[in-house]
Image 1 (cartoon, helix red, strand yellow):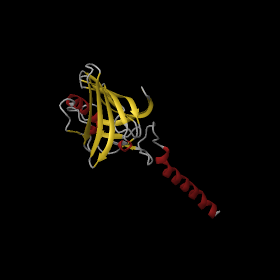
Image 2: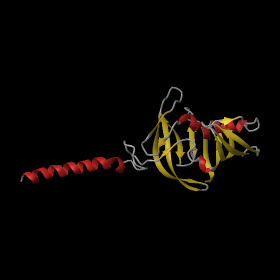
Image 3: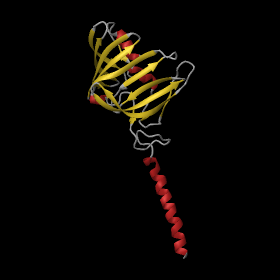
Image 4: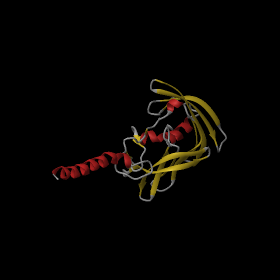
Amino acid sequence: MVRKALFIPLGIMLGAAAIGLSFPFLTGIPGSEQNIIPRFASQWHVGKGVEEQPVLQYLVNYQGKEFLAKIAFLEKTGDTEKIHLTIDDKKTGQHIEQELQIGEAFVFIGPSDEIKPYILALDRSVFSVRDTLTGSKYLVVGAEWGTTYVGKFTPKLKVTEYVDSEFEFGTLKTFVVSYKISDIENKLWIANNIPLPAKAQYYTIDGALDYSYELVALEP
């Protein structure tokens, strides 16, 4: 009788321990809300996947400009990365192709005067993510990605959705990262192993569109 009395609580304790150990692995899978980051979760950072030398083409809208920007990542030497940038202006018909360098922080180095207006637009749209996100972030719904600063507001960036996003070239599984100020919501769509966001929509505090961009072609 004594042995039986001891075995029952022991079995309960072992079962509880097993549940406790497995809990982080059973919660927080991509697409579900959770407060615990699972240990197997992927992480993303600006530049992830550049070693595969992908080619990304974006349709960019920024302050009246509308243009296609094709970014081909080339070899990396030290802290700099070579890229081949092709611009096709949808309004003026201007076509520019240049080989450029970007620094480790994804900052353009020494662009020519001809391409500078488009570099400025890219800096403040597609590449602006480098100013918002630092380090690696978990690709898990509910994960916080830090705080951003918009005037007097300091909203938190958070992964809010895991969705299949449709693009001209096909479907990508993406994580939506967003923040809200009153009724205005700004969003980034992040796909794992693509070095820059796949899509973004950003508005000013007044609700006017600041910029938007979206992948229209992807060559891994």
